Image (cartoon, rainbow, N blue to C red; front, side, top):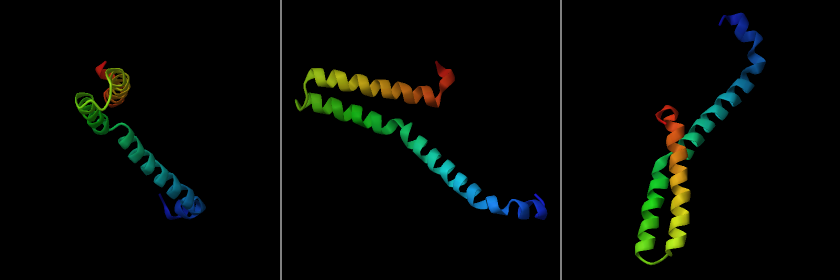
Length: 83
């Protein structure tokens, strides 16, 4: 970009800055949303709760299905061609 282009587009600088920040926030949010570690950790905790008698089999099955569906969604997002 030349100096004249920079001067002509100077009023747009705040918009570009806000756009950049929003893009970074979106990247971080997506990284957290599609991180399988918390889901896997919850699956382990769920099994421990079942074995310790804190939850019944029906609750375990329902919650396990939800978590496995979530893991499938994460894996499909990370590697969409792996199907």
